[in-house]
Image (cartoon, rainbow, N blue to C red):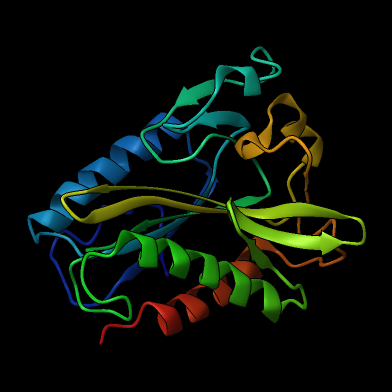
Length: 226
């Protein structure tokens, strides 16, 4: 895995490159970096990439966000985002993976199928969670990955994507060990009747590095070219 700069290497290859950034990456910087990388992938001057990072504590509003779902606007910075979805939280202990792929390349989905791509992002988190003994599940009408906990269901992973010229960006956010109380300033993804959880909350003490290793292995099995 390369470190820090997801714009490198400057020349394209046929393999998806994996990058990780230490520390906390400001949200606006991440958006600018992704947009530059999307343009480079389209121009065939850079490889497709998956970028692992953490953000400082913030709330992000997708294109479907309702203002009433922002319960405490003064708690953390609020960023308007071009990704799909509603309000979500990002912060330390949450593994964000920004996925920059050319969706027109032949993979298991076929060519240029956004719905299949989102389904594969869900499958990516489900398989990763299974490696840690957690049963993550889809729910009809709800985006993201959920864990059944007796008489309630909690969200453990979020998805928000954007596609430009058939190049994807944004991606997933998997709760590894964030402060779950930080989610109380929003209605996560517009769903008030359900909660949020994390690997740590479910009794799994995996580090971000351990989770990254599994994410990379499962990503390669799901998104392998055909």
